[in-house]
Amino acid sequence: MKVKLWGVRGSLPTPLTQEMVRAKIDAVVQRMSPQDLENSDSRTRFLANLPSWLYGTVGGNSSCVELTSDEGATIILDAGTGIRSLGKKLIDSGVKTIHLFLSHFHWDHIQGLPFFDPAYRSDTTLHIYSAQENAYELLDMQMQEAFFPVGLSAFTKDMHFHTLSEDETFSIGSVEVQCKKMFHPGDSYSLSFSQNNKSFIYATDVEILHRDFEKNGRTENFFKDASLVLIDAQYTGAEAIEKENWGHSSFCNAIDFASFANVKKILLFHHDPIYTDKKLYAILDSAHWYRDYTGNHDLEIELAVEGMEFSI
Image (cartoon, rainbow, N blue to C red; front, side, top):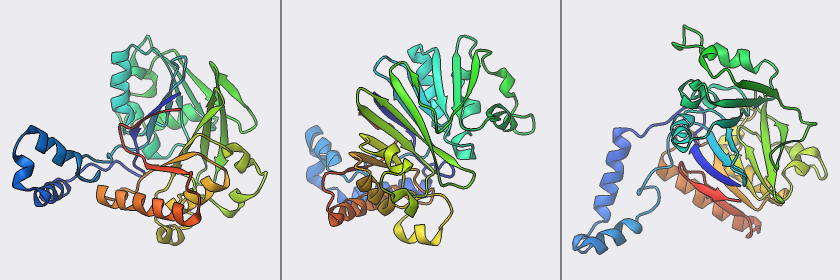
């Protein structure tokens, strides 16, 4: 399986401001010396040695992840604003059949759907999966005339809705799919995709609770030995305490839970909209420190960044 990230922010889209861009330029200029500008090689070396928060950006689109199975099936996880660019890529690639999974229906996870170009093409087959039996009505509400110029009825006629159940495992080709309800206001479902004895889990909008650390419990079994987990880590430890019951986790919670479930690698995801790139990479550094402090040196941790690609 291959995974590509198209939107990694939580709550609402977060574009770079003029002040942020200027701060990056100022920080780069301060690091520059005359030797760095001597020739093409020296400039390339200078840019390569810049910290990640300066040379690029984590991205500002809300949640959207592309999963491609070994047979080439296209699976999309959530329809945040990142789905707009993904849709243009899918049209260019000639993809006709799309499987879209929705973890829940908060705006930052569905607001990109009206701008998903493949959905309007008559030759697209669109399967939409969620745990809500009234998914059509919920999506149609955000596209009523007062909010959007065209309704859900403008989508392809070859559109099919499927209701997910925690007690059901089903397949898309040779990919086995399961879901697990987690704690989040209004509920949110983590999604597991397994193929060739490897698994990818999409666990956005999750507040990890004490009950999730029960041995041989349903939550542990769902996450146990996962190859890669994209996990909600919106808060610092202090914020997680201050915002208890808001439905999100801290990077400390994410690391503790990954260690408990013997997860191989996690991507810190659903970044707070107030966090700058510099802040997010500082959190990643703190996450590495905390992992080493807890003694689980084998756990791989990365920051979810738009455009990242992984093979599982």
